[in-house]
Amino acid sequence: MNTEPDFLDIFQTAVKDLPHGVDLLHNPMLNKGTAFTLAEREKLSLHGLLPPCATTQEMQVQRIMGNFNMKPNDLEKYIFLMALEDRNENLFYRVVMENLETMMPIIYTPTVGKACQTYGHIFRRPRGLYISANFRGRVAELLANWPYEDVRVIVMTDGERILGLGDLGADGMGIPVGKLSLYTACAGINPSQTLPLTLDVGTNNVQLLNDPLYIGLKQNRLRGDEYDAFIDEFVTAAQARFPKALIQFEDFANINAFRLLKKYRNRILTFNDDIQGTASVTLAGLYSALRITGQALKDQTIVFLGAGEAGIGIADLIVSAMVEEGATKEEARQQCWFIDSKGLVVKSRENLAQHKLAYAHDHEPLPDLLSVVKNLHPTALIGVSGRPKKFTQPIVEAMAKHNERPIIFALSNPTANSECTAEEAYTWTNGRAIFASGSPFEPVTLHGKTYIPGQGNNAYIFPGVGLGVVACEATNVPDEMFSAAAKTLAAMVSEDDLDMGRVYPPLTSIRKVSAAIATAVAQIAYDKGLARAPKQEDLRAFIESEMYQPTYQSYTDA
Ligand code: NAD
Image (cartoon, rainbow, N blue to C red; front, side):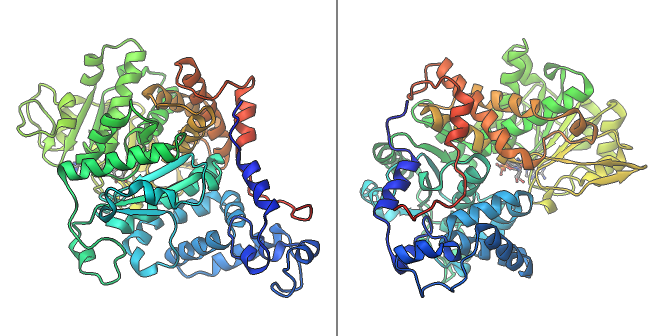
């Protein structure tokens, strides 16, 4: 059993030494706003500081939703929600959790991307920790300034490749903030145990460097040994200050993402969601699709458009999964083909980036996706190029010619970058495509049948994986955890879901999904001797009991 104080203990300590009056109203973790009861107001010197009518959290949710719906655009909605999080965290999470399908595209992609693009201009209150390269040598000191002791999940970015938007420097802080909100909303990681963090190593974005309102260091990016030493200093200091914390690397550029993952994955509790989380959610979608086609994974020929973090990460996990089904690694790799901006990735191409080499097969060069589909007859197309409209009608029709149920995953975000729309995929294949996308699409009705396209949202995976490794205090995150997460997620897709064309369960079941994934992940940690916490008899019940709920505590006994 974990002997460290859990959040409840922290909370009860806080209740004992509860601040009074305005200090209490200004503490977002403890503030209840108008929901302080009259008895609490009496006890905590709040009379007069609040309007006389005490309300319930339900009424507050109603008021928030009314205000939210009046906001003229998504960015204004984002700003409104961030302000709510800054003044009343429980209410923020109650609102988000009860309206997840509406809120997720606001607090995370795509709106968070817009917010990051203008972060310095909409900046109101700092959230998270900014550690700039000016503080090299003093990282431990800055980490000591963080007010919460028991941090369990750190999401950390250097802002170089924010979503598909490129180098946004310190303005990328919206991503760790948003991602951690999803850890809490989707998997119940306690907000007091999360730490959004930006390592500000400068930016090469000229527009930002010239923007007087930019919030980060106005210098070009640190590179080479100096950069590596800074990351190392951070990792060492973070481990010393928060020894149980998962450090999730987020939105690093390809040049650093793959090598940092390789460097740290066996040394510390870490993973890269852009690579491994994406891989897991896509593999889950494939497992569901194969329930429809009745085929084995190892018999698929998969063509990827885009050979970046998402594509290579997905292929690496598919290869592990094919190996589990009896293929050799070499055979499995041979089933995965990549097209990048220069055409088919083949052995004869010069200067291929390191991360593409394993998938550079012996084949004549082919210039474009259509010729690749016609030559290789893939069973599945996975779009991760970040470029819109690349799955054209002739390409999708060629897929439908060779496959009874072609698998078409157009994963590029945001919606405008999708390789094709759900409507196009269904229409061009006469309803035969098994379609999933990165951004949500509305249901499509074709010849009287309604299809509900699945969204391969990483939020199905990373919160559950995070909860699992935190619950058992794992030391590492091996790949098995991501394949187990994929299998668990796919198993939660019902026959009815599949019948409607949906390869993922509805987002409304996300807390159950996360609890199931967390249990599978923690079980692997125990099986492989990677868990530091003693095992609970009923792992699932224990994990569910640890999940944060956004209800208010009573302060009248304080
Ligand atoms: P990345 O920048 O690492 O990789 C993009 C790749 O696309 C590069 O290899 C690039 O060479 C290639 N590319 C660019 N233009 C191309 C073209 N015209 N034809 C073929 N290839 C081209 O980015 P990433 O992290 O791999 O993400 C790629 C896309 O996948 C983004 O749009 C992102 O939003 C999306 N994504 C979706 C999910 C999800 O659905 N769950 C998760 C992660 C990423």
